[in-house]
Image (spheres, rainbow, N blue to C red):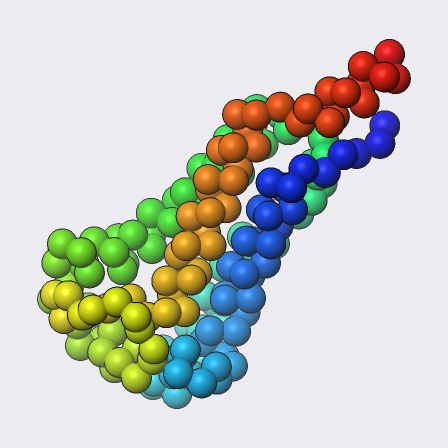
Length: 171
């Protein structure tokens, strides 16, 4: 059966590609004012960075592999749930680490000094609140991950009308 890949599926892979690039590069490759590799290395050991990178990259590659396997095909319910719940858990971590402290001050006191050291010299377009500010690179990462979740919810709740049309023609 011929696969008919939806634009939403292509956008999903694009957003996951941004997430993957972030995870691969942000702690290792200097990206001008978007990151401060030396400051991160001063806070975390190379082994910690390797482990964190490996775990994050493995998770995203797994999600991308599943998405690509089901490109243009009907997703079983458990796959739909996995592709929503797994990135939602990652996003929940981002909310707890960045956005709750930033917006509401929850846990900000413990993060101010560390975040200032690691991200104080990086570009941010938001104002400082509660002593911290999510930098631009992390904001792009969080928004891309959020869009992955929204796109997967959309894909799960809508039918691939082109796929349905092909099934009717072949019947």
